[in-house]
Image 1 (tube, one colour):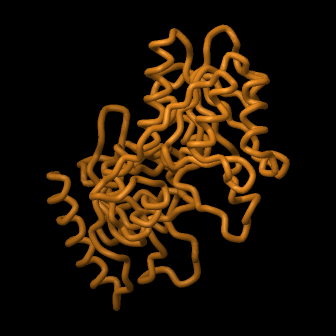
Image 2 (cartoon, rainbow, N blue to C red):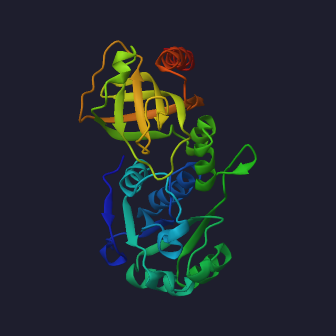
Image 3 (cartoon, rainbow, N blue to C red):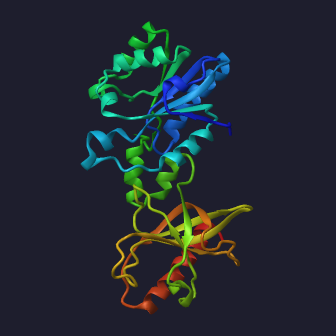
Length: 312
């Protein structure tokens, strides 16, 4: 993984080598995004230049349609880390403003070339659009960039099961609990990160102690029980987890909680530690049980199901 440089504007971009720039939102950094990034990285290596990603924060929808804003798959800092794992040298994280939204696609290209004269190539997905009213499609980009001395690489959309890979598709599959599809589209296992917080210790009294994890994603997975792999410094620990509102034992709290029961013999984590958990497979939806005993019996069944899935 490269040591990546992060800047907030075009004027902060180094000029010592030619720049080969991927452009887009890249929410989730899925397989399609990775193909675009790889195009920029490969071209930079061939040209003896450096590769970059131009992305925007906040997501344009948060300004243009705040009541229907897109719920993101990952926060900005995590996106930066995932991009860095694709060997990109530079991230331009440009603030998205109403002034920027009103700029035509032609104006935006001209501003990029003016402020980054070493910009040699642009790399985008074939469905990419930008500029006022999203008027700048791939044909527009190719024709106008050529006049500015910028070569454009259009990367065909990747497909899975005959349908294009997209962030919106991943959001839908995640809300449906289709973790096998989510992971296939991402090209890596979907994962959560959060701090362990002190809970009510109810799981311990049931014989299934849990780590309660503070985690609040914009796009929430389906409420239910999952088989997980929890990372630690030496590898990973199989686990079963419930994500949701805990309707059998919770009457008031409307904030979903991630409760993880490790299937290993010991627990290396304590309150305050940050846990990274990879979501492997959906087991069942969350449900309300008639009492604690019935809940306890179901947790035992869920645990065995997770062991079978994870071969633990």
